[in-house]
Each structure stands twice: as C-alpha cells, then as structure tokens.
Length: 121
Image 1 (tube, rainbow, N blue to C red):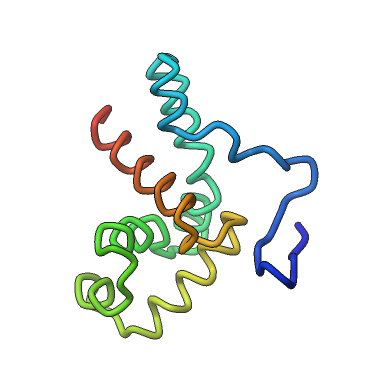
Image 2: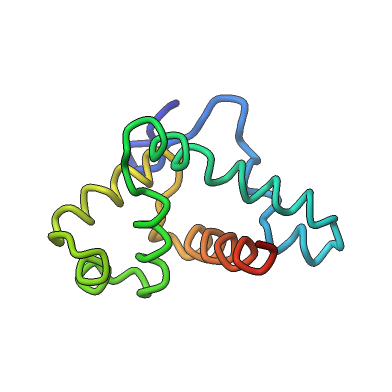
C-alpha cells in the first residue's frame, strides 16, 4: 500500500480501478444480487477482518458515521464513545479502506453499500 502525501489517500498496487464499479452502478446494470452483495462484502472486508481479529467496531462506526451525515459529535453520542475515539477510528477506517471516507464519492459508495446490505438481508 502506498500513501499519496498530497491527497492523503492510500492505494493498493494493482488495484487502481477498484472504485470503477460501485454497488449502485452494479445494481443499475441489472447485475445479480449475488454479484452486488459480493462487491459490498469485498469493499467492507478490511473492516470486517479487523473487527473479527482485533475486536474493533469499524463497520459499526462507519455505518453510524454515515447515518449521522459524517458528524463526529453525533456519531460519538450514538456510539457512547468520546469524540476523539471516533476521530481515531475514522482515520483507521480510511487507512484500511484506502479511501478518504469524507470524500463525497466514498461517502455515497459506503452509504449505498449499507443500504443494499440492509435491503438484501
């Protein structure tokens, strides 16, 4: 993984176009539910792995953060944690996902992922 110091975004070698297909785009293309859910799972996989291995709550934190319009204070109140805890988690989440979760495209992608997972599950 490399970090672009100007943009602050991480990238994984050989994975340059991983955001080319978004969950919403796959849905609108009429792809199967299995394909869309597989995409959603792959996008959240780094967070789910950390949650399982290190007992973090990154998936819950990201979902709550997005549901609260990227508001750190409201997210911290909903999760019953200090605001600084949310800040640290969001930095780690961005690092693990290789995107700035405050970027509008990333925000939309992950919000849609959670909506799709809720719909199909």
